[in-house]
Length: 382
Ligand SMILES: *Cc1c(COP(=O)(O)O)cnc(C)c1O
Image 1: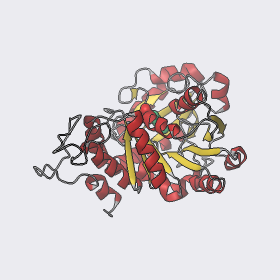
Image 2: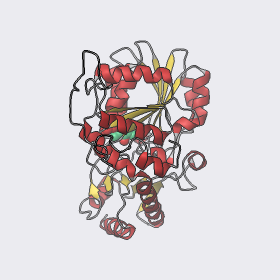
Image 3: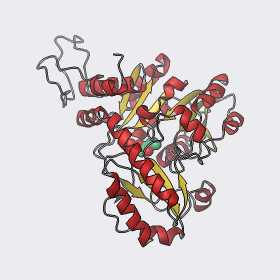
Image 4: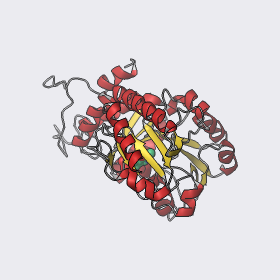
């Protein structure tokens, strides 16, 4: 179906169910399917391989990313693992250094042991990717905006130099979502998502997805989805499908609220730095403007007074919830050095700008005045 994003979000994959006309895709809570005779089946044989609720979600997400194919997984890490499983011992991967901690952990602690080699480069430094690519580089792995520094990687530029060297480009599009950024249209080969975040959008499901228009990658990854088996259950697919229907309206509100919060933070005397790709002072502002529809709902900022001040700030928030994760309707706030990024050694954290006073916000869709009020009270306490 070709239609606008908002329309695809509601209708792609969501045809009325043929037996009853049910408008909402049913939760096909079944592991197996009756066959009329041996091998004479409806296309569904066993739910690790295929399930109708999962089919609907795969079609929906593919439409949103402008992909031919969608494959869903039980988590974002499960999706990442499937891509890495497609490589072989001796292959080399170039990755941005500011990727999701769990992604770094799979690369460094799981696949290095299986003979893959990794080079991590400063995420927004195009020259560094060029230098790091070798004859055996099979993949270049990007995450943009990055977490928690919100650097922006120029996808089209990395694609150009990776393709010249015969390497495929994977973009983790979790932070932007296809509403704000469509990596396949910029030449990327594969998009990966943690649907746990904005796509699900309600902090009630863990899931992952891979989207691609490349027939060969689709064959390899669909084989691995079935062979390795990190598939989501039908209930989780149903919840994610329900989430994507409102993705466009949610993302606009997330971005509206984030922009208003940033306006407040940059003027506040206790804040020494604000990282947000919508600020003209952001080093990658021009790239963000070129490849993203809006700068999104994530903000990082540094509070003067380091660890002690950030502890006071974060204790006793009333509207914001102090929690890891992001992308849900409720606003979350967290301290990367103590929480999400604690596994990175202190020197490395500091080299990447993850200061002890750094605080990360996932702006939810509550009334913006309540969010600003809660933050102002917290800044007073700090
Ligand atoms: C959360 C996250 C992941 C991992 O996804 P899970 O669903 O938690 O396994 C990968 N990439 C990014 C950018 C994330 O935020």
